Length: 293
Length: 161
Image 1: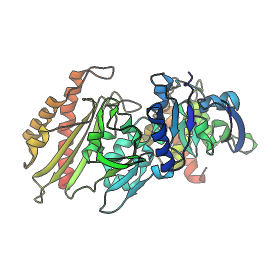
Image 2: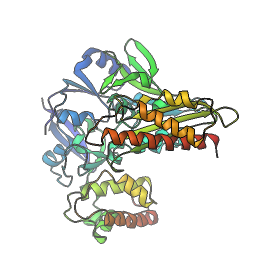
Image 3: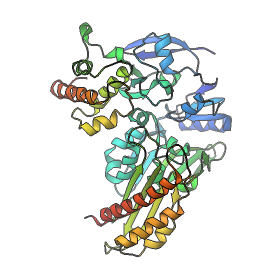
Image 4: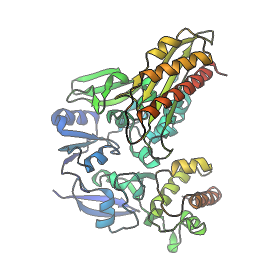
Protein backbone atom coordinates (compact mmCIF):
# COMPACT_ATOMS: atom_id res chain seq x y z
CA UNK A 1 0.00 0.00 0.00
CA UNK A 2 1.31 3.42 -0.91
CA UNK A 3 1.25 6.59 1.10
CA UNK A 4 -0.06 9.78 -0.44
CA UNK A 5 2.49 12.22 -1.84
CA UNK A 6 3.70 14.72 0.70
CA UNK A 7 6.56 17.10 1.19
CA UNK A 8 9.06 16.03 3.83
CA UNK A 9 10.87 18.34 6.23
CA UNK A 10 13.52 17.35 8.75
CA UNK A 11 14.26 20.35 10.97
CA UNK A 12 17.29 20.23 13.25
CA UNK A 13 16.32 22.70 15.96
CA UNK A 14 13.18 23.54 17.96
CA UNK A 15 13.11 27.01 16.38
CA UNK A 16 13.10 25.59 12.85
CA UNK A 17 10.41 23.11 13.85
CA UNK A 18 8.13 25.75 15.36
CA UNK A 19 8.65 27.94 12.29
CA UNK A 20 7.48 25.06 10.08
CA UNK A 21 4.54 24.27 12.35
CA UNK A 22 3.54 27.94 12.21
CA UNK A 23 3.82 28.15 8.39
CA UNK A 24 2.23 24.85 7.45
CA UNK A 25 -0.49 24.67 10.10
CA UNK A 26 -3.03 21.91 9.89
CA UNK A 27 -1.87 20.77 6.45
CA UNK A 28 1.18 19.29 8.20
CA UNK A 29 1.57 16.38 10.56
CA UNK A 30 4.44 15.91 12.96
CA UNK A 31 6.29 12.65 12.47
CA UNK A 32 7.84 11.33 15.70
CA UNK A 33 7.66 7.54 15.93
CA UNK A 34 5.16 7.12 13.13
CA UNK A 35 3.69 3.97 14.68
CA UNK A 36 0.23 5.55 14.62
CA UNK A 37 0.71 8.16 11.89
CA UNK A 38 2.10 5.82 9.21
CA UNK A 39 -0.65 3.29 9.85
CA UNK A 40 -3.48 5.82 9.45
CA UNK A 41 -1.75 7.32 6.40
CA UNK A 42 -1.49 3.88 4.82
CA UNK A 43 -5.18 3.37 5.46
CA UNK A 44 -5.79 6.77 3.76
CA UNK A 45 -7.63 7.91 6.87
CA UNK A 46 -5.55 11.07 6.66
CA UNK A 47 -3.42 12.43 3.81
CA UNK A 48 -1.30 15.33 5.05
CA UNK A 49 0.42 17.59 2.51
CA UNK A 50 3.51 17.97 4.67
CA UNK A 51 5.36 15.85 7.20
CA UNK A 52 7.63 17.45 9.76
CA UNK A 53 10.04 14.78 10.99
CA UNK A 54 11.25 15.84 14.45
CA UNK A 55 13.67 12.94 14.96
CA UNK A 56 16.64 15.14 14.10
CA UNK A 57 15.86 17.58 16.93
CA UNK A 58 17.91 16.53 19.96
CA UNK A 59 16.15 19.03 22.27
CA UNK A 60 12.89 17.11 21.93
CA UNK A 61 14.42 13.93 23.34
CA UNK A 62 15.59 12.91 26.76
CA UNK A 63 14.68 12.42 30.39
CA UNK A 64 15.81 15.02 32.91
CA UNK A 65 15.32 13.73 36.41
CA UNK A 66 16.61 15.70 39.37
CA UNK A 67 16.42 14.70 43.01
CA UNK A 68 13.50 16.51 44.58
CA UNK A 69 12.52 18.30 41.38
CA UNK A 70 10.33 15.86 39.54
CA UNK A 71 11.18 15.16 35.91
CA UNK A 72 11.01 16.70 32.49
CA UNK A 73 10.58 14.35 29.55
CA UNK A 74 11.01 15.52 25.97
CA UNK A 75 8.08 14.87 23.65
CA UNK A 76 10.07 12.61 21.31
CA UNK A 77 11.54 10.44 24.07
CA UNK A 78 11.01 6.88 22.94
CA UNK A 79 8.85 4.64 25.09
CA UNK A 80 11.66 2.05 25.30
CA UNK A 81 13.89 4.69 26.82
CA UNK A 82 11.27 5.38 29.49
CA UNK A 83 10.73 1.64 30.02
CA UNK A 84 14.44 1.04 30.68
CA UNK A 85 15.32 4.35 32.37
CA UNK A 86 16.58 3.65 35.89
CA UNK A 87 15.62 7.14 37.00
CA UNK A 88 12.02 6.69 35.82
CA UNK A 89 11.83 3.15 37.20
CA UNK A 90 12.89 4.47 40.62
CA UNK A 91 10.76 7.61 40.77
CA UNK A 92 7.77 6.84 38.53
CA UNK A 93 7.56 3.02 38.35
CA UNK A 94 3.95 3.11 37.11
CA UNK A 95 5.02 5.14 34.06
CA UNK A 96 8.00 2.86 33.30
CA UNK A 97 5.67 -0.13 33.55
CA UNK A 98 2.97 1.41 31.34
CA UNK A 99 5.55 2.45 28.71
CA UNK A 100 6.93 -1.12 28.71
CA UNK A 101 3.49 -2.55 27.98
CA UNK A 102 2.82 -0.50 24.83
CA UNK A 103 2.80 -2.53 21.59
CA UNK A 104 5.98 -4.50 21.05
CA UNK A 105 9.70 -3.91 21.55
CA UNK A 106 9.87 -2.48 18.01
CA UNK A 107 6.92 -0.17 18.59
CA UNK A 108 8.40 1.04 21.90
CA UNK A 109 11.68 1.74 20.15
CA UNK A 110 9.96 3.97 17.60
CA UNK A 111 6.96 5.43 19.41
CA UNK A 112 7.31 8.57 21.49
CA UNK A 113 5.72 9.63 24.77
CA UNK A 114 4.33 12.75 23.09
CA UNK A 115 2.80 10.74 20.28
CA UNK A 116 1.04 8.42 22.70
CA UNK A 117 -0.81 11.44 24.13
CA UNK A 118 -1.20 13.44 20.89
CA UNK A 119 -2.73 10.49 19.08
CA UNK A 120 -5.51 10.91 21.68
CA UNK A 121 -6.73 7.35 21.56
CA UNK A 122 -8.94 6.53 24.54
CA UNK A 123 -7.07 3.22 24.88
CA UNK A 124 -3.59 4.77 25.08
CA UNK A 125 -1.43 3.42 27.87
CA UNK A 126 0.79 6.25 29.09
CA UNK A 127 -1.71 9.15 29.46
CA UNK A 128 -3.50 7.23 32.23
CA UNK A 129 -0.56 7.07 34.69
CA UNK A 130 0.65 10.51 33.58
CA UNK A 131 -2.70 12.06 34.50
CA UNK A 132 -2.66 10.16 37.82
CA UNK A 133 0.77 11.69 38.50
CA UNK A 134 -0.53 15.22 37.73
CA UNK A 135 1.75 15.54 34.69
CA UNK A 136 1.65 18.77 32.75
CA UNK A 137 2.33 19.30 29.07
CA UNK A 138 4.24 22.21 27.58
CA UNK A 139 2.81 23.49 24.30
CA UNK A 140 5.13 25.64 22.24
CA UNK A 141 4.74 27.93 19.26
CA UNK A 142 6.77 30.73 17.74
CA UNK A 143 4.87 33.07 20.06
CA UNK A 144 5.87 31.31 23.26
CA UNK A 145 4.89 28.52 25.57
CA UNK A 146 1.97 27.54 27.71
CA UNK A 147 1.64 24.78 30.24
CA UNK A 148 -1.49 22.87 31.12
CA UNK A 149 -2.41 19.65 32.91
CA UNK A 150 -2.44 16.64 30.59
CA UNK A 151 -6.05 15.91 31.56
CA UNK A 152 -7.06 19.28 30.09
CA UNK A 153 -4.95 18.73 26.96
CA UNK A 154 -6.68 15.55 25.80
CA UNK A 155 -10.29 16.53 25.13
CA UNK A 156 -11.72 13.52 23.36
CA UNK A 157 -11.11 10.87 20.71
CA UNK A 158 -8.37 12.40 18.51
CA UNK A 159 -9.19 15.86 19.92
CA UNK A 160 -6.59 18.01 21.66
CA UNK A 161 -6.49 21.49 23.13
CA UNK A 162 -3.87 22.47 20.58
CA UNK A 163 -4.07 25.75 18.72
CA UNK A 164 -2.91 26.13 15.11
CA UNK A 165 0.85 26.59 15.11
CA UNK A 166 1.35 24.87 18.47
CA UNK A 167 3.03 21.59 19.25
CA UNK A 168 3.62 19.51 22.36
CA UNK A 169 7.30 19.78 23.30
CA UNK A 170 7.65 18.29 26.76
CA UNK A 171 6.05 16.73 29.79
CA UNK A 172 6.64 18.07 33.28
CA UNK A 173 6.16 15.58 36.10
CA UNK A 174 5.93 16.81 39.68
CA UNK A 175 8.07 15.18 42.35
CA UNK A 176 6.12 12.33 43.99
CA UNK A 177 4.87 13.36 47.43
CA UNK A 178 6.19 11.75 50.60
CA UNK A 179 4.10 8.76 51.70
CA UNK A 180 2.56 8.39 48.27
CA UNK A 181 2.44 5.72 45.59
CA UNK A 182 1.15 5.36 42.05
CA UNK A 183 0.18 2.03 40.48
CA UNK A 184 -0.92 1.15 36.95
CA UNK A 185 -2.68 -1.93 35.58
CA UNK A 186 -4.45 -2.90 32.38
CA UNK A 187 -6.63 -5.63 31.02
CA UNK A 188 -6.69 -6.82 27.44
CA UNK A 189 -7.13 -9.98 25.43
CA UNK A 190 -3.51 -11.02 25.83
CA UNK A 191 -0.22 -9.50 26.86
CA UNK A 192 1.41 -9.06 23.47
CA UNK A 193 0.46 -6.44 20.88
CA UNK A 194 -2.97 -5.83 22.32
CA UNK A 195 -4.93 -2.68 22.81
CA UNK A 196 -6.22 -2.34 26.35
CA UNK A 197 -9.92 -2.88 26.96
CA UNK A 198 -9.49 -1.04 30.27
CA UNK A 199 -6.46 0.54 31.88
CA UNK A 200 -6.21 2.39 35.15
CA UNK A 201 -3.81 4.22 37.41
CA UNK A 202 -4.20 5.20 41.05
CA UNK A 203 -2.12 7.64 43.07
CA UNK A 204 -2.58 7.67 46.83
CA UNK A 205 -1.01 10.13 49.23
CA UNK A 206 -1.27 9.49 52.97
CA UNK A 207 -1.47 11.83 55.95
CA UNK A 208 1.51 12.06 58.28
CA UNK A 209 -0.01 9.29 60.40
CA UNK A 210 0.63 6.95 57.47
CA UNK A 211 -2.93 5.59 57.69
CA UNK A 212 -5.48 8.17 56.53
CA UNK A 213 -5.78 9.10 52.86
CA UNK A 214 -4.78 12.69 52.25
CA UNK A 215 -5.39 12.54 48.52
CA UNK A 216 -6.32 9.93 45.95
CA UNK A 217 -6.59 10.18 42.18
CA UNK A 218 -8.03 7.29 40.21
CA UNK A 219 -7.77 7.57 36.42
CA UNK A 220 -9.47 5.24 33.96
CA UNK A 221 -8.49 4.68 30.34
CA UNK A 222 -10.47 3.12 27.50
CA UNK A 223 -13.84 3.62 29.19
CA UNK A 224 -14.44 7.24 28.19
CA UNK A 225 -13.44 9.43 25.22
CA UNK A 226 -10.46 10.69 27.22
CA UNK A 227 -8.67 9.70 30.45
CA UNK A 228 -11.40 9.82 33.07
CA UNK A 229 -10.53 11.13 36.53
CA UNK A 230 -12.89 9.74 39.14
CA UNK A 231 -14.50 12.38 41.34
CA UNK A 232 -16.44 9.96 43.49
CA UNK A 233 -13.48 7.84 44.56
CA UNK A 234 -11.70 10.96 45.78
CA UNK A 235 -14.83 12.18 47.59
CA UNK A 236 -15.36 8.80 49.24
CA UNK A 237 -11.83 8.05 50.39
CA UNK A 238 -10.12 11.32 51.32
CA UNK A 239 -9.68 11.55 55.08
CA UNK A 240 -10.45 7.88 55.53
CA UNK A 241 -8.49 4.93 56.79
CA UNK A 242 -9.10 2.30 54.14
CA UNK A 243 -10.92 -0.93 54.82
CA UNK A 244 -12.03 -3.68 52.46
CA UNK A 245 -15.64 -2.46 52.59
CA UNK A 246 -14.66 1.10 51.82
CA UNK A 247 -12.46 0.02 48.91
CA UNK A 248 -15.33 -2.08 47.55
CA UNK A 249 -17.62 0.94 47.74
CA UNK A 250 -15.05 3.11 45.94
CA UNK A 251 -14.56 0.48 43.23
CA UNK A 252 -18.33 0.41 42.66
CA UNK A 253 -18.38 4.20 42.47
CA UNK A 254 -15.67 4.15 39.77
CA UNK A 255 -17.69 1.53 37.94
CA UNK A 256 -20.67 3.89 37.97
CA UNK A 257 -18.66 6.74 36.48
CA UNK A 258 -17.15 4.76 33.60
CA UNK A 259 -18.98 5.12 30.28
CA UNK A 260 -17.51 2.34 28.16
CA UNK A 261 -18.68 1.28 24.72
CA UNK A 262 -19.06 -2.08 23.00
CA UNK A 263 -16.38 -2.70 20.42
CA UNK A 264 -14.23 -5.40 18.89
CA UNK A 265 -12.05 -5.64 22.00
CA UNK A 266 -14.69 -6.02 24.70
CA UNK A 267 -18.31 -5.37 25.54
CA UNK A 268 -19.31 -2.38 27.65
CA UNK A 269 -20.63 -4.77 30.28
CA UNK A 270 -17.31 -6.59 30.54
CA UNK A 271 -15.41 -3.32 30.70
CA UNK A 272 -17.57 -2.14 33.58
CA UNK A 273 -16.81 -5.34 35.48
CA UNK A 274 -13.11 -4.91 34.85
CA UNK A 275 -13.20 -1.30 36.10
CA UNK A 276 -14.35 -2.64 39.45
CA UNK A 277 -11.72 -5.40 39.52
CA UNK A 278 -8.85 -3.07 38.63
CA UNK A 279 -10.04 -0.30 40.96
CA UNK A 280 -10.25 -2.67 43.90
CA UNK A 281 -6.84 -4.14 43.13
CA UNK A 282 -5.05 -0.86 42.46
CA UNK A 283 -6.44 1.03 45.46
CA UNK A 284 -5.28 -1.82 47.70
CA UNK A 285 -1.85 -2.02 46.07
CA UNK A 286 -1.25 1.72 46.04
CA UNK A 287 -2.40 1.99 49.68
CA UNK A 288 -0.02 -0.76 50.77
CA UNK A 289 2.78 0.82 48.74
CA UNK A 290 2.17 4.28 50.17
CA UNK A 291 2.25 2.86 53.69
CA UNK A 292 5.59 1.35 52.78
CA UNK A 293 4.80 -2.10 54.12
CA UNK B 1 9.97 14.18 -7.10
CA UNK B 2 12.78 11.66 -6.78
CA UNK B 3 15.58 12.43 -4.43
CA UNK B 4 18.99 10.82 -4.21
CA UNK B 5 19.80 9.63 -0.69
CA UNK B 6 22.45 7.45 0.95
CA UNK B 7 21.53 4.57 3.18
CA UNK B 8 24.07 2.73 5.33
CA UNK B 9 22.91 -0.87 5.24
CA UNK B 10 25.11 -3.58 6.76
CA UNK B 11 28.14 -1.25 6.70
CA UNK B 12 27.81 -0.55 3.02
CA UNK B 13 26.61 2.75 1.57
CA UNK B 14 23.84 2.47 -1.00
CA UNK B 15 22.86 5.45 -3.08
CA UNK B 16 19.19 5.19 -3.98
CA UNK B 17 16.73 7.41 -5.78
CA UNK B 18 13.60 7.58 -3.70
CA UNK B 19 10.37 9.41 -3.25
CA UNK B 20 9.59 10.91 0.19
CA UNK B 21 6.71 8.48 0.59
CA UNK B 22 8.80 5.33 -0.03
CA UNK B 23 8.90 2.95 2.90
CA UNK B 24 12.18 1.54 4.13
CA UNK B 25 11.11 -2.08 3.60
CA UNK B 26 10.30 -1.45 -0.08
CA UNK B 27 13.60 0.33 -0.66
CA UNK B 28 15.60 -2.41 1.07
CA UNK B 29 13.87 -5.18 -0.86
CA UNK B 30 13.19 -3.65 -4.25
CA UNK B 31 15.88 -1.03 -4.76
CA UNK B 32 18.78 -2.36 -2.72
CA UNK B 33 17.87 -5.97 -3.45
CA UNK B 34 18.25 -7.37 0.05
CA UNK B 35 15.22 -9.63 0.26
CA UNK B 36 15.91 -11.19 3.65
CA UNK B 37 13.63 -8.67 5.38
CA UNK B 38 10.02 -9.63 4.77
CA UNK B 39 6.90 -7.57 4.35
CA UNK B 40 4.10 -9.24 6.25
CA UNK B 41 1.13 -7.24 7.49
CA UNK B 42 2.44 -3.84 6.34
CA UNK B 43 0.92 -2.26 9.44
CA UNK B 44 3.66 -2.76 12.00
CA UNK B 45 1.89 -5.62 13.75
CA UNK B 46 3.68 -8.80 12.69
CA UNK B 47 7.37 -7.93 13.01
CA UNK B 48 8.49 -9.69 9.80
CA UNK B 49 9.99 -6.43 8.50
CA UNK B 50 12.08 -5.80 11.64
CA UNK B 51 15.51 -4.30 10.97
CA UNK B 52 18.00 -2.85 13.44
CA UNK B 53 18.48 0.89 13.26
CA UNK B 54 21.51 1.97 15.26
CA UNK B 55 21.23 -1.43 16.94
CA UNK B 56 17.59 -1.06 17.97
CA UNK B 57 14.74 -3.04 16.42
CA UNK B 58 12.37 -0.98 14.29
CA UNK B 59 9.58 -1.79 11.84
CA UNK B 60 10.67 -0.98 8.31
CA UNK B 61 7.13 -1.24 6.90
CA UNK B 62 6.03 1.85 8.84
CA UNK B 63 9.32 3.71 8.56
CA UNK B 64 10.11 6.18 5.81
CA UNK B 65 13.31 5.48 3.90
CA UNK B 66 14.04 9.20 3.79
CA UNK B 67 13.93 9.27 7.61
CA UNK B 68 16.54 6.52 7.80
CA UNK B 69 19.45 8.53 6.38
CA UNK B 70 22.53 8.80 8.53
CA UNK B 71 21.63 5.73 10.59
CA UNK B 72 23.26 2.31 10.68
CA UNK B 73 20.73 -0.13 9.31
CA UNK B 74 21.26 -3.84 9.89
CA UNK B 75 19.24 -6.47 8.06
CA UNK B 76 19.46 -10.23 8.47
CA UNK B 77 22.08 -10.30 5.67
CA UNK B 78 24.30 -8.17 7.89
CA UNK B 79 24.63 -10.85 10.57
CA UNK B 80 26.75 -13.12 8.40
CA UNK B 81 30.14 -13.83 9.95
CA UNK B 82 33.54 -14.09 8.33
CA UNK B 83 33.75 -16.93 5.81
CA UNK B 84 29.97 -17.06 5.48
CA UNK B 85 29.51 -18.61 8.91
CA UNK B 86 26.15 -18.22 10.60
CA UNK B 87 25.88 -15.77 13.47
CA UNK B 88 25.60 -17.64 16.82
CA UNK B 89 21.97 -16.65 17.15
CA UNK B 90 21.21 -17.98 13.66
CA UNK B 91 23.05 -21.19 14.54
CA UNK B 92 21.00 -21.52 17.74
CA UNK B 93 17.77 -21.20 15.70
CA UNK B 94 18.98 -23.98 13.37
CA UNK B 95 20.13 -26.23 16.22
CA UNK B 96 16.82 -25.89 18.06
CA UNK B 97 14.52 -26.32 15.06
CA UNK B 98 13.17 -22.83 15.63
CA UNK B 99 12.58 -22.29 11.91
CA UNK B 100 9.77 -23.79 9.87
CA UNK B 101 8.54 -21.77 6.88
CA UNK B 102 11.09 -19.08 7.68
CA UNK B 103 9.03 -16.02 6.92
CA UNK B 104 9.16 -14.64 10.46
CA UNK B 105 12.75 -15.76 11.06
CA UNK B 106 14.75 -12.72 9.87
CA UNK B 107 12.69 -10.38 12.04
CA UNK B 108 12.63 -12.82 14.92
CA UNK B 109 16.43 -13.18 14.84
CA UNK B 110 17.03 -9.44 14.72
CA UNK B 111 14.67 -8.88 17.66
CA UNK B 112 16.48 -11.68 19.51
CA UNK B 113 19.82 -10.02 18.81
CA UNK B 114 18.57 -6.68 20.09
CA UNK B 115 17.22 -8.18 23.30
CA UNK B 116 20.47 -10.09 23.93
CA UNK B 117 22.55 -6.99 23.23
CA UNK B 118 20.56 -5.22 25.94
CA UNK B 119 20.45 -8.13 28.36
CA UNK B 120 22.76 -11.11 27.74
CA UNK B 121 21.23 -13.03 30.65
CA UNK B 122 17.48 -12.79 30.04
CA UNK B 123 14.72 -14.59 31.91
CA UNK B 124 12.18 -16.55 29.91
CA UNK B 125 9.61 -13.84 30.69
CA UNK B 126 11.94 -11.13 29.39
CA UNK B 127 12.50 -13.04 26.15
CA UNK B 128 8.75 -13.48 25.65
CA UNK B 129 8.06 -9.84 26.47
CA UNK B 130 10.68 -8.44 24.10
CA UNK B 131 9.83 -10.92 21.29
CA UNK B 132 6.11 -10.27 21.50
CA UNK B 133 6.20 -8.09 18.38
CA UNK B 134 7.28 -10.96 16.16
CA UNK B 135 4.54 -13.33 15.15
CA UNK B 136 5.23 -16.92 14.06
CA UNK B 137 2.39 -18.94 12.59
CA UNK B 138 4.25 -22.26 12.19
CA UNK B 139 6.37 -23.69 14.94
CA UNK B 140 4.96 -21.93 17.97
CA UNK B 141 7.30 -20.09 20.21
CA UNK B 142 8.76 -22.78 22.46
CA UNK B 143 11.71 -23.64 20.25
CA UNK B 144 12.34 -20.01 19.43
CA UNK B 145 12.60 -19.19 23.13
CA UNK B 146 14.88 -22.20 23.64
CA UNK B 147 17.09 -20.97 20.81
CA UNK B 148 17.37 -17.51 22.38
CA UNK B 149 18.20 -19.07 25.74
CA UNK B 150 20.91 -21.18 24.07
CA UNK B 151 22.29 -18.14 22.24
CA UNK B 152 22.35 -16.25 25.56
CA UNK B 153 24.82 -18.82 26.88
CA UNK B 154 27.16 -18.15 23.95
CA UNK B 155 26.61 -14.42 24.42
CA UNK B 156 27.62 -14.32 28.06
CA UNK B 157 30.60 -16.62 27.41
CA UNK B 158 31.97 -15.00 24.27
CA UNK B 159 30.56 -11.51 24.44
CA UNK B 160 29.10 -11.68 20.92
CA UNK B 161 28.33 -8.40 19.21
